[in-house]
Image (tube, rainbow, N blue to C red; front, side, top):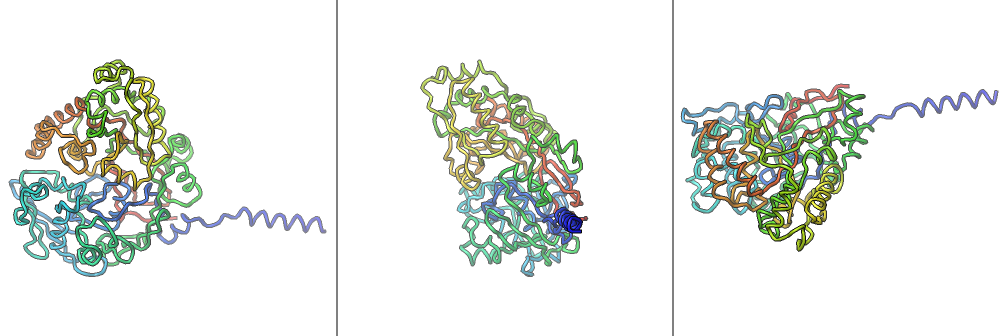
Length: 536
C-alpha cells in the first residue's frame, strides 16, 4: 500500500509539473495586451526629432498626423483630417480637421496645433533631422536656412480652427505620403512650454504623466531598458475601433534572446529573427514566420571630413573591395539582397542602374593612386556599428576581413549602444559608419535626399552642386520620366563619388503569434494599430 501511495503521489506531482503555466502571451491575449519586440530602447519620444524606425512604430501609437498610410496597400487615408482637397495646379492642399479631434487630455485639437508644430519643425534651433521633408512647402527652405525670418513667407496657414492650408512651391504628388510621417505629427505645445520650451529636443514633456498625444494610445509607463507601455486612449477620434487595451514595447537588442522570448510565450511579435532560425520556422511554424522585402537600404557612410575618406579614390577602393553577394550569403542568407544601387530597385516603380560592384584589382589601383599602395601608410580605420550582437556584427566582421584581404587595410570595429550610436552619427564623430534607412514612403526621393548638401541626414557631409540640382529637379516636376532621369543622375554621382556605399537591402524576418489578428505586412514597416486585436 505504501508503494502504491508513493506511485499515486508521484503521478499527481507529475501531472502538476506538466500543467502549463500562463504566459505573458496567454494573459495578454485574454486581456488584449500586445507584447511587442521593438529592437531598440527609444532615445526619446519627440516625433519631430526621431530618426529611428523602431521608435517611429511606438510614436505611431501615440500620435497621428493629418493623414495616415494604410497598413495593407500603402494608400493615404484620413487621419486627423477627415477630408482634403487639392487645387488643379497641384500646389494648394486644404485639410479639414475632424470635429471630434481631441488631445489625449480631452482638449480640442485644432488647425493652430498643426501650424505651431510645423513651425517648430522649421525652427533651425530645434534641428529636426528630417526637416528637409518640408522643402516642397513654399518658403520652408528659405526660412529654415535663414534667408527669411518672416513666418508669413511660409506656405502654411490656419484660417479657422478646422482648416489647415498648405501651399507648395512646386507640384509634389508625394506630399500626402510625407504628411503621414512622424515629422508632421502635432505636438501639444502647452506641455512643451511648461517643460523646457518648444526649442528643446525632447525632454520632460515626453515622459509618462506629462506627454499629451493624439493617437490611439497614451503613454502609461516607461521603464528604461525594460519596456514602454501605452494604453488605449478614450479621447481618440476612432477609439471605438481600437481593440487593444495596451501595447508593451520591449527593447530587444539581441535577436537570439528575442526568439527565445517568443518561444517562451513572452512576445506576440518580434522585431526580427536570426537567419539560422528562418529555415526551421519555415518548415515547422510557417504561419508564424513573416519574411518581407522592406524598402530599406543598409550602407556604409564615409565621413568626407575625416581622413583618409576626404579622397574619393579611397572611398571607391573601400567599396570596390566588398563582395556584396558573398557577404549576404555569409551574414544574412535570405534576409538580405545584395545592393548595387543606393535606392532599392522597384521603389515607386523606379529601377536604378547597378553603379556599384566588386572589383578587388580596381580597388587596389584606386588605393595606390591615393598614395596607399597595398594599404601601406594607411592607419587602421574605425567602423562604427549599432550594437555588438546579431547579423550586423557578423556582416561587419566579413567587411573587416575583405578590407584586410583585398586592400591590406586593418579595420577596428566600434559597436555602440543605440543612443550613443545616434549621437555619434548626429555629431559626425566617426570615420565609417554602418547604417540603414527604412524609407518613410515608397518614393526614391526619401533615400536620395541623404546626399543633398547640408541635409540634416547627410551624415557623409557630401556636397555636390550637380547632385543638389538633380534632387531639386525631382521636386519641381510631377512628370515621372523626368523624375527618373534625375534619380539616375543622383545614383551615378554617388557611384562615382561614393558618399555612401550600399551593401544590402533588408528582407525583414520576424515572428507573429497566431493570436494576433489584423496584421498586414508592408514594404515600409508600418503598423496600423487600430486594425489589430488578439484572439485565443
